[in-house]
Length: 118
Length: 107
Image (cartoon, rainbow over all chains, first blue to last red; front, top):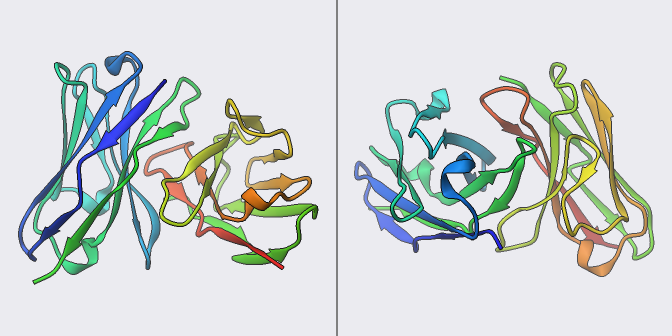
């Protein structure tokens, strides 16, 4: 079965960067796009980025352009999301989500809490 | 960006009730509309895609309808495990956007 397992919680200082990983299993990694979505108390669910694991092409939400980088490692079936220049408003739970053949999300990671605090 | 507006933001209902949640898109999105269920401390769970198609394993008491700008999620007979927050999402165009959520609480 499809499984998306994310890395553990992080605490970072303002101005720092954080990298969250999402390891996929149970399917052909390069056949499905992967997205990152974050959830904050104030903003609800926000889409951040998408990657095509086959070619590595990415697309980012304008809000995060310049601060977010999404990469993948096909040898380990893992996608990464790096967010830089962290500020307190980036405190959130970050989820990876697989885009299924229906073009909608069909599987989600368990979430990674990122706390930005001095 | 396409704005997604859900209503109500919360509702109270009893087990066995029929519950309807609405979602409106700020512009037409055809049927590229998904619904998710989220319980406290858990990741969202995908319920419906294509406005009306159930994801594998989702009980048939859940149904979705609509096209264009107006959509509904209906739970025909609310069960104890259905108390959660529900979100709609459009995937017609980037950036993908979500509704603000509807919290379904026990009456």
